[in-house]
Length: 297
Image 1 (tube, rainbow, N blue to C red):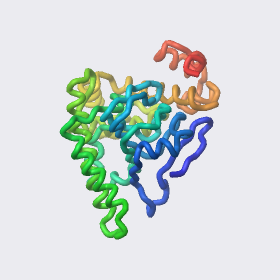
Image 2: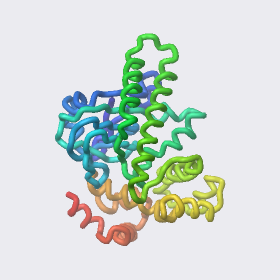
Image 3: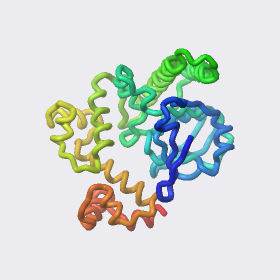
């Protein structure tokens, strides 16, 4: 795993631009935290996806600007480029799974990965509790993955790992679906949601560019009315609200985790006029960028 310094926040990579190296790894959680506590307890981001299975232990995990309670048998889903960090508890038992998007993003795998909306964290809670019936199944898959990673014969290795990883994602998605039934304002995965997740991904790719709702709809080959109906029905928000929330979230990340000044952050967010960025931020957060930075610091 390599890292880069982005102002005062570290960005970690998993063999990025090295397709011949492992694109998926598993770590024992307790061992990993003991070895890397200086890094894991500081805000950081990755260019890969991370699943954190807290099998035992109590504490807190921080995702963006929210503190989440950690209890036994909780799984967190950390998307690429999402700021998070661990508390100082290094006695957790569990596992970490790291994988690059390209590992599952190959042709027929793409729609499956989109159906697993585990990592759409700007729009839902980034965790769930593993139900009792799933724990042993997950354990079996984890052991199979560890065994295959240790396999000296490379023939078909990635295909087997990919199959077991998909199995893990399915099991976790089932647990999350069951968990979400008990939670307000949550959603589950089905075939109809693929279009919505594609919109999520487009927002992630283009939110700094000032695209209109019509331009987003064209990229999805649907009408603006269909897109609006989709977001209203699924997350009770308009497409514009979702884009605005993503812009604000990134601005907040930069205000807290970078040394850029307000004008530089506004420019990075696509605002040519710094004063308009300040007004935009204040409209959506009820405080100015400078006040937000002071409050969180």
